[in-house]
Image 1 (cartoon, rainbow, N blue to C red):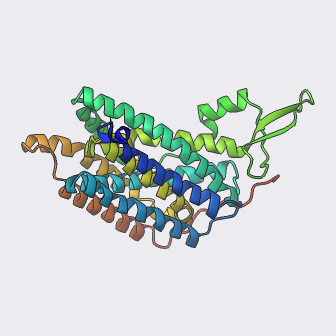
Image 2 (cartoon, rainbow, N blue to C red):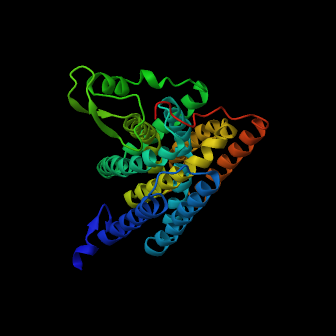
Image 3 (cartoon, rainbow, N blue to C red):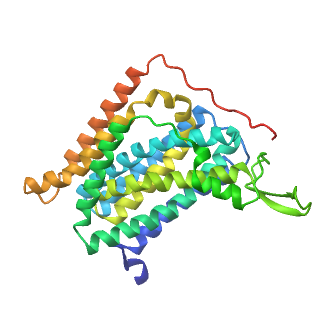
Length: 333
């Protein structure tokens, strides 16, 4: 029993194990009970799943309050909201990936589910590295803050840039070095069939596997922004990691509802850029005003205000806009 109370990244081991157990239970329930068969997830089911994950994420803030403190609970909620909102940008790119590879809607959940397992590991490694840097070099927080301000300004100035998935270097490398089939083979990531050149049986990567790799790459790219953003809110690795994972779990479920109305949030990216600038600048504001840290209540309130204004403006600006047509069925399935 003493082992459970050993500290790991500043928190007792049992707290980490409890969180991991909750995540595993949610994933097993999701894939093993709700989606053991391939089926297209509708908007209603997506919203119900999202509500479940959102509830779990918010309830976990109560656990943080109970075990760590009220201020830390507010920081967790701020990090949770920021991460979930920043991750919404993933939806734009993931929708493009599924369209490019012509992944049928009934198989998209499978790609996203296995993608989240990679996210849990990759985010853990990135957050562990970030926590080590922050503990060893406190000035690294100022580097994170400057990076967030720069990213926010760049996001605001650049605006829309079309993404050409076909030119992604990783995708081009896989197509050159691996056997790849253009056809969908059910929900399989790999399929064994005769090689066209030799006639011998060989393993081929399917479009589902290529889409899975691209989704993981997208998460790593977005994590470069979101992980420093959360560290600028709190340096506690437990709060950083748990808020990250709960936010991403819920967003994966919400994807199927958001994908249908994503055009209505076209201008939300400008609110996200303002949010990144705010999160980065509050580190310097706290120093200038002689505060030990920026008040958690203010941070949470300003975050909600920025995002609320962005959502309202985007919905007003895109009223009457029609969604772009989506590919519902892949050819050659």
